[in-house]
Image 1 (cartoon, rainbow, N blue to C red):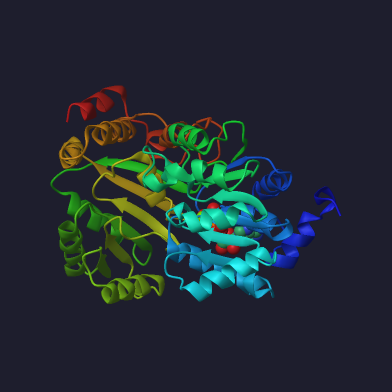
Image 2 (image 1 turned 60 degrees about the horizontal axis):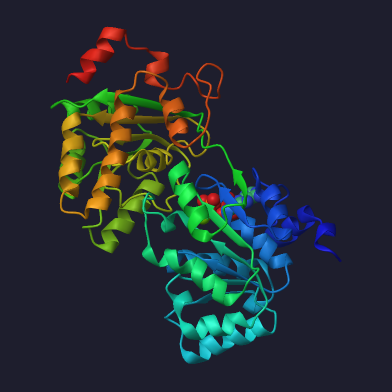
Length: 421
Ligand code: ADP
Ligand code: MG
């Protein structure tokens, strides 16, 4: 049977139990099954994994999946094994395997059992693995979290830069799939160029979150009181408050507690047990508010977070989008409130001063966008989406009225006063 005759809906149901594709999944999968280089940009939670997992499961040979985090890979492999009776259908190849385990992986690949082989980019540089893979049938290479290839992304990993070179050694005509939740045009350009897939079929989902309300308020010395008032007005709702430093996290959590708000701190300086306890308390709704550094959030899936407050402005629009994106996952209300003072920008600039010049320049450019966002007097949603290369009509677009500048426009002179703070 030719691949074109495959009923993708049937395969989706068979392997994953879903009756419908989400967003652009079907189009993406069709492109991959046809053997195209393919580029996928979808927000977090959009369902990118399935875009390569399903084609891998129904193709001949093994798909190589590059992913930056071992924990992430393990989760995915466990999930795949849960849906297929064939034991070796998915494997992780990494430095933690012993000789016997590596041989088992190799034998499963050779026998055509393994459909998905997850590797960290640094493992893929191993001569032994490259030599082995060169002689196997490889269906395609999927590069997940592909923004790691770009210095303009928030998680640059130099090892990602070698992928194209290694791939050439593994085989000549292996299709490449890049996937990312990073929507900035600059990062996307970097990905396509570095993976050598500038002609890739590209699929971009919208990054608009119509149920989120965006608001920026000037940050004064009364910011903590402002936050307490906001939280009290939203009693019983779940929220996250982001601060830049661990010290501020501790202080603010305590201030909230003293004021009768059920809040806990979360940052990387707390031991693992405390962190997981505080996370659970939040998920179980024993507490309402987590005061956190950016260490909090990755992989946390609480659908009914009702507000995300930034006590300190983040270092890029992308970070802001990711962090506020944790609000309103269920489609319900999600208030995103940022406190802004230009002094905080100067502080962030100062933090970067010890870094290499190239990094400083990038950091500075990203910060300037944050300043522009905070100081704009037009639609914040339009600003964010424009930053991600997306057109948005601030009169008729979905969620158009959901920000302070649109629902409560500043008068011209007030906007100017703000700039002179
Ligand atoms: P991303 O990598 O884009 O952040 P994931 O691949 O982790 O997203 O998928 C997010 C969630 O969506 C997962 O829980 C996944 O099971 C679910 N999902 C993916 N595709 C579908 C679908 N077609 N129908 C229902 N749920 C889906
Ligand atoms: Mg993903």
